[in-house]
Length: 166
Length: 165
Image 1 (cartoon, rainbow over the protein chains, first blue to last red):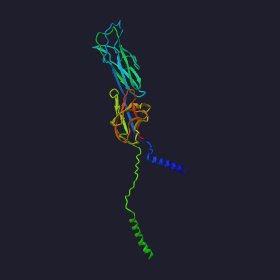
Image 2: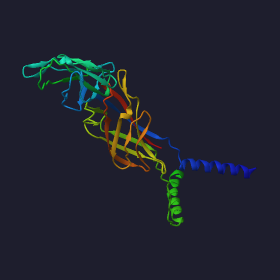
Image 3: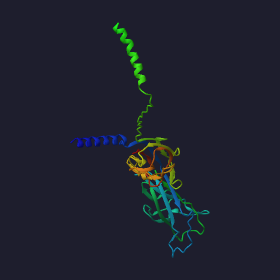
Image 4: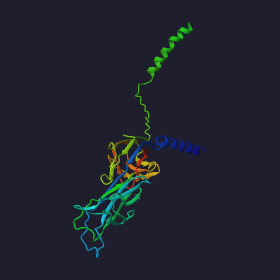
């Protein structure tokens, strides 16, 4: 019995010594907080792959319309979630000296999501519209109504495209 | 008479007794215990990081205004364990109902033990070490700039956690 008591006490003492010499520590942590702020402002970027459009001469009877090489149009816009992005185009009448061809004789077809067909005018006509931010791309093919009534000449005009991201 | 005689006798006995013990070297030992518990201290040089507006085509990765964050991590650890510095966002970047995933935020880092990473809503390792010590490093935040984000001023909170097991 005494031997057993001694063994128990010895074990208890050994355990106590072990605990004192090998303390169990809790994991320590420290933290820091940082606030992040990101500014995203409205922005619009329009890219058209060609700065000129040419219509070759053609027989009005054979070619009542003349199509130009399609323009590749890239639209990038940042706006609010419900913001409406609009791409417009306008141009003055085609002129050759004192001769003119009404700009309404130019129409277009279009491909690409959000792009639409239309007729050129001296005031803005819509080429495309989208809701929210993003990248859009499409093509616009300008078409000239070819008429026997036009006076001969080399006519020119300048189309102004306007991309708006509110 | 008796009391006076007694007071004289006692010192004599003490002197005698003192000389009766032979001189000897005395040694003793004392156990010195020092407790070094795990400890962690973290400091970050700024409590705000700001990204300005920029053209995504020109600056696809926007660096934070004000430059890099300086980070100092001091830790005491149990041998064999790993000191870990993590970073996580409490939520995505939000501007009203609009959000940008926090994965749009990433960092490069310099300093021993520091690593580059991409922010998430769970802990992401920014640095780790296997011994006690004082470590310093820098963290350079950048924001992935896309055209698809809705306009707004977005914000989120980032929590840095240094743990020493």
